[in-house]
Every structure is written in C-alpha cells, then in structure tokens.
Amino acid sequence: MCPILTEGGLFAFIVPGPKQRDLLRDGRYAMHAFTPQDVDDEFAVRGTAVRVGDRALREELVAAYHTPVEDSWTAFEFDVHGVMLSRYRSRGDWPPTYTIWNQG
Image 1 (spheres, rainbow, N blue to C red):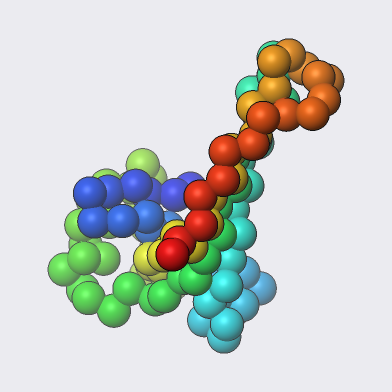
Image 2: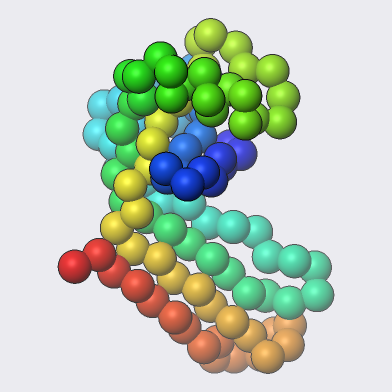
C-alpha cells in the first residue's frame, strides 16, 4: 500500500483482496512504517477508513498517484484517530521516546 497525503487528507488505493474486503466490511485500520536501516524509529497511525465515492476526488487521487491505477482498485480515505512516533537514540537503544497523539 502506498499512502497518498493531500491537503484534503490521507488516502490510498487498495487492490482487490482481503485488505480491501476488511476495510469495506469494518473500516478499522492501523498503518506502521518500516524503519530506516540505521535507526529503529517507528511511526504508526490508526483510525477508520471509508470508501471514496466522489468520482472527481478519485480522479484527483489517480492524478497524484505514482503509477497507473486500475478500475478495480478502491480508493479509501483514512481518518486518523491516533498517532505514535517512537524515537531511538541509536539502533538497539531501549527504551525509545514516545510521542503520542489521540483524537479528542
């Protein structure tokens, strides 16, 4: 999955499969970013995803995407309910420093 960050929000195209079906059925999600090679920093975001129904918005997202988008791919908007950033002084250093944000 490749997130699309715009002024309007956080979006992604999800190909047909279990992840797409889960989001259409329930909507809850958690994303976790892989760390760079030289440090163990982590970034995670969670919330609910909703299918993008507006055709004009989908076309804007298609234009912003880095590769061609197939019609079977579903565009989702990811509402952010919580974010966590874990920072390490160096690889393997424990514990990290956490920065946490929760909606409300």
